[in-house]
Image (cartoon, rainbow, N blue to C red):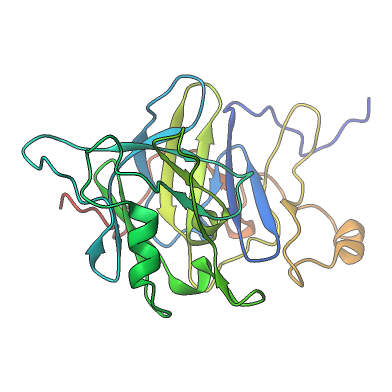
Length: 247
């Protein structure tokens, strides 16, 4: 086996995912702080078999799409963080009478260009801006209805364009932060494993990396924060302003 001077064990089984309208980036061993606009927040998973989170609210243009009938009790529906889904996929039923209107049909009736979605995940408020949910090429919204058999939400690529999401493979745990806007791309990330050296991020972002030149360049040393080292979400980091609806 080839020995690399920068080789290090990967002690944390974590990865972060983010994307733009045509491509995406996978960050191994944690997340790159350069990609985030605020501190990561911990979000509880609702399942031991998938990365599903609780959504208490989904608004569009200031109008609540999850208009709960009984507001005297805590209300939420599951939402799967799904990198294999393209759009924001929301229910088109009244969820067994739990909400007053069908969320997808309500969205279609009030849809207006230029407005944002705001989604509350486990008490934390995040924005899904217009430029991410509207498909300019197709001149159509990237918002769909879930099958009637699933009383939940699918958070697809639309969400990964506006948020940086870290997945913990050791347990169903998710960390979320707003992404930089415009998207801050890490040209290379120090992601070291037993089998690979400190290497460039698995990135397909158009125009970000000249792969021929990158292959000829020396790899950055592990531990170089200025070179985009991945951040373990359990590490202590200097606090930065975040967005929390409970604050």
